Length: 265
Image (tube, rainbow, N blue to C red; front, side, top):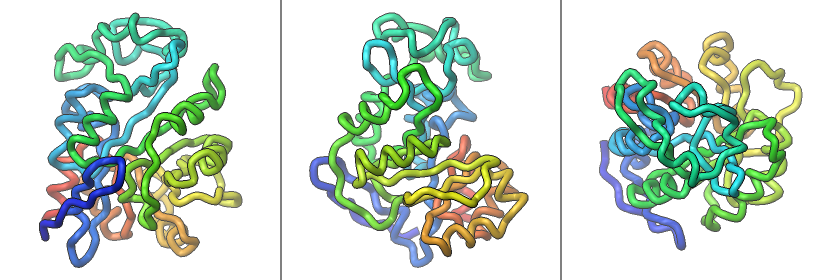
């Protein structure tokens, strides 16, 4: 691997270009909820553990009642903590001390992660963030407006996989709204079972690996239409090899160390 230089993006942070300088560009490796196979998803420990082997982080975000943004997947606290209730009804003061880690097989106490702390970790380590907004939610589209205010202005890039931020959603409305709010930050339209007869004017399409397995030609078809293809959630050797063979632009994975090792050969 050819070691690169640090690229300074005004007003943001240093983006380590080491992974991007190879003669044939490998796909970007994005840690899905952090290194979430090894450590509890959406915790600082999971993201810190993904620093070495990933190019960027992926996180789901939800808006709390007090206006803070938390890194959290589900609509409730139930599955991944010792607390109960809707995330949208909580305040950061109330939930910052809950146990968001002991449910995981690592059996370690981990507090929840506020989005501002993930931003700081990414800034310190030159990592990008793919930010997924969840819909429908009680606050409607407020989360996109809040993110649009919070995220700094970035230099435009023709390569969405290597931008500092990407906004992701299964919601077509959210993706279209984001392109109006922040045209400087790439948008990713996530696909699971939806037909391809209408795709938004955005930079990236994000199909699940199961769809790519069923229809491998989808990757080149989307790229021929001008989209990048970021595939989730890619964890097995067979799926990693398939993504490499198909030439996807980014691999989103719970196991960034295994993906990096597979790419490095």
